[in-house]
Length: 117
Image 1 (tube, helix red, strand yellow):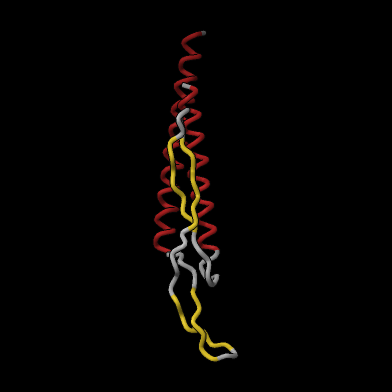
Image 2: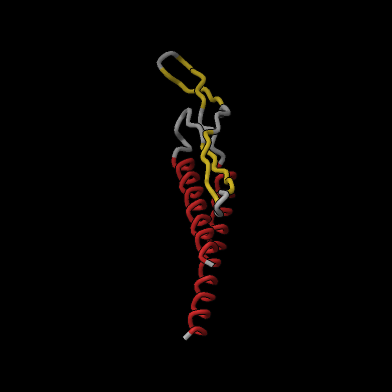
């Protein structure tokens, strides 16, 4: 039963990391040349999940900006608001599911302790 709590804690930590990465991407939405990061999850042999953060080096859209030299092409960030909002919703639901797992495990451990008395 303790492994279920460990696994749920691992999931909570991983989804929190995904939320942080997505929030960082959205915070830099208007930063020229910013490259978004992406979180993927991998299974840990001892149980649980490990978040892996990788930079998405694909180029963002190019726009023309007025400068002293005239109009200059500038690459803007490659962050897509829709993708980030979906990632945040997935992280929220994953966080809720792992939290529910911990609550259920706590209830089960309480029941076991009550029957042992």
